[in-house]
Image 1 (cartoon, rainbow, N blue to C red):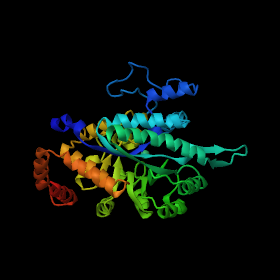
Image 2 (image 1 turned 90 degrees about the vertical axis):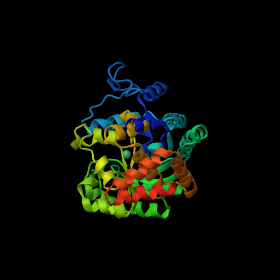
Image 3 (image 1 turned 30 degrees about the vertical axis):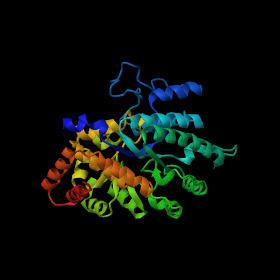
Image 4 (image 1 turned 45 degrees about the vertical axis):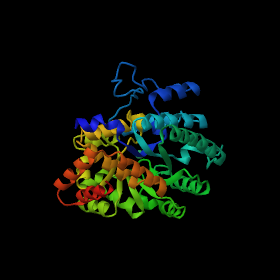
Length: 388
Ligand SMILES: [Zn+2]
């Protein structure tokens, strides 16, 4: 266990699931509020000294962690502080460079055109402003390129439809993504309140995204049950945001394994937002899903709001769920194999990760795989031995 942690910074890490506006730390929120002359709500942040500064080095938001509505309200306050291209540059640079310094070699972030450039006229009609969108995306890409220069970290973006907005807004967002392509956008996501609307309400969206074409990762099975995941798969999702409800359905687990679907699990986010966990991780199925052979990645989701980062989530996997160093390397490889990035870049990142295996790692992997019962996990781990 200790050896997994000692080497943790050297361990290559991947994030497939982080929302741009959710990455804003309390420290940055204060800077942006000052810049835009916004008065933050009383008690929006814990005062210094009222929280563990080692756990929350960038400040800590104060909201009722047992209330999903309170989280959404806090999220909206933070998202509203991000208003121009410089703000987007600043928050991207901050998140990516902090996490890259912790070993993150690849990252996908979720961006919503609706958040970036929505405008309303006097009659209340909503449109998306293309020049503004491209200006903001230029700021985002400037940060991505600088972090790549400095750390070598690759970053890609997913366009996103927000399911709790109206169907018209969702359709408009996807039309906009199709009409305003950017090379950096290599995937599409459906996010927002999972209890609002069904995947079959958005047939136009699923089909248009297939035609662009962009691969899909849909949020499902976070605060709803396995049928939500089945529906996401039915409409072509290659990855599932969270997907932890799969643990309740053996047949679904078999389907996820057979189709090589990767779950984007976010332990801290799930602890806070999934009420049945009661703010604890002891009932979280991360370890059980992994042992059944489901491909999964470990994510920050809304790093700023939850006070987390890639190192912390990998540490939780190690300390709370007992993931060994080779299991964490396998998680990183599963994430890269499922990444929405072109073949050459993906292959390079996969090779880089295999190069991080020490002689001891190869021995540990061989012994560990040999000791497992026959099944999906054993065959995946054994297939990795061929890369030695
Ligand atoms: Zn999410």
